[in-house]
Amino acid sequence: MKILITGGKGMLGQTLQRVLSEHPLAIADLPEVDITCEASLREAVQAFQPTHIIHCAAMTQVDLCETERERAFRINAYGSENVAKASQACGAHLIAISTDYVFDGTLTRPYLETDRPNPKTVYGASKFAGEQAIQHYASAYTIVRTAWLYGEKGPSFVHTMIKLGQQENEMPLRVVDDQIGNPTSTDALAAVIVRLLKNPIRGIVHGTCEGEATWYEFAQEVFRLKNLQRQLLPCTTAEYPRPAPRPANSRLEKGAIRAAGFPAMPDWREALATFLNG
Figure 1 (cartoon, rainbow, N blue to C red):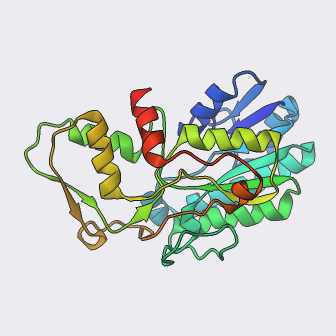
Figure 2 (tube, one colour; figure 1 turned 30 degrees about the vertical axis):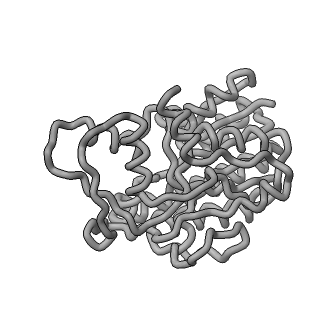
């Protein structure tokens, strides 16, 4: 396999570089390669001739997307269209990373791959537009939705909690306790991606760790594993308003990879312990 990774310098991209180091790799990332420039991307793809493309590049700053809508759609939608066209042109299988934010978060059960997206943020809408572009322009593709991702070097919720927990501050740290999801390590997600490279599933799959938690419960486990003593207190979403509304339910059901016979994803607590103790 010859694998080109867009956004290869990012959090997931760095993990993929490590776990796929035995294969020929090309990293398509700024400033050398700009996915919003079709010519720049086409040149990189034609020069490397990948058999597989893993599309990680995205604008993921959820709140910034609300105020920079045009930029978010240029990167997440138009950029994904360019990647899809490039993969189709060279005959590469495309694995594209998407997000729970394509859903509105109102269901009381985990979201299935077949549930209808209904994004409520600019970030979610731009990522959903990217999914649609990939489905339109690429014939060999897998869209992998993930959520609550953390990994080496960050930035992530885990890194933020450790930094805040290490501060000498007597004020309790308030963390939202009415949003629920599947905390997921980049190592766990990368393991699914590696299996998809070898055994492709066409269409949409969900890739998150097993088990669920609120952000408050997630923070509690980080503090326990790192032996951080700062006091944690639960709060509501209404008490911690953000420019972009967060989904109350980000849980993703992993029916597609289960049906394909893939091993179960690790429990989120197990994956977190592995990450923090590694």
